Image 1 (cartoon, rainbow, N blue to C red):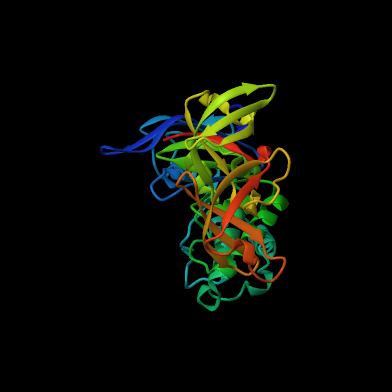
Image 2: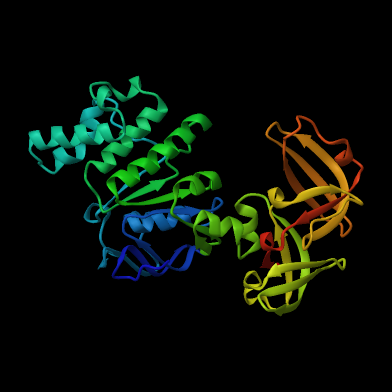
Amino acid sequence: MAATQTEADIHLEGVTKRFADMTAVDDLTLSIPRGSFFAMLGPSGCGKTTTLRMVGGFENPTQGRVFLGGTDVTDAPPYRRDVNTVFQSYALFPHLTVERNVAFGLERKKVSKAEIRKRAGDALELVQLGHLGKRKPAQLSGGQQQRVALARALVNRPRALLLDEPLGALDLRLRKQLQIELKRIQQDIGITFVHVTHDQEEAMSMADTIAVMNGGRIEQAGTATDLYERPQTAFVANFLGISNLVDASVRAVNNGHARVETHDGASLHVPSDRVGPHGSDAVRVGVRPEKITLLPEGETVPDGANVLRGKVVVAAFLGITIQYVIHTAGGEELNVFTQNTDGAEPESLAVGRDVQLAWRPEHTFVVARG
């Protein structure tokens, strides 16, 4: 992350959190610039929610410091931190109207009634619920209740909004709709959003920067494009989308190009900046399924393309795409997605046929083996 400690809205310095003999977060240093939409993505138990709770003040780090806007808040309780959190459970007061739920925090701060009415109304308009202020939470759908929880968090005008799996309880259609809404709201108000999720598509559709976490550490952080097109570890390659990975060794690096040899002797080319620090050590060479062109054995391959050979073992018609599973000469099972342009699976690529997998060298990436 480019922001320095003084420029960052949120900065964690060498933060570790242990629960008994389990390390949930392991020596994490992280800077989140003001006004960014930052996602922490990873499987259950990777440390993302614990990290968010330390930013919010709900957990104290075992080691390290937490800064908000350059101020050390490591020992400050949640109510003294200029952040608000939205959880998966909406935690609305059932006996209060939507308007009163949103205004609750302002009432406790003794803000004037006129100011409360205006700010609560503005917050509800922001989440497109201005017309439902007089209803009770039980009269709202799950998606509407989550919007009320969001308005309640935003009405206090916090420095940052922390979102802990906020869409996890919603059905797929609502979740996708609210992903777009959350991104719009963040752009409209311009405050920092920190979003924890295990859903790769959710993170990729909303966040400016994604940090992929594993075992209490950040494996890689960057834009969705960086992480998807240029993963630096096998974990990142497999957590964001589907990756085809083949064991290989780097044989030569020169003039911006590298030559990689797979374990069964196939020679592949890759831009040298994708090789990274792996050198000639044992590596895994990768390509995404949609980047591969599938050709019948014997058909001419485009000049300069990387090629592997194999046999079709699965051809699944998925409507928009056809998914193929290819058993390669080296023993791997690789996935290929092809666009459904003809309305049917080509006979030349049917199950049992020998095929060639061809792709451009610039779509190849290299990660460490292990």
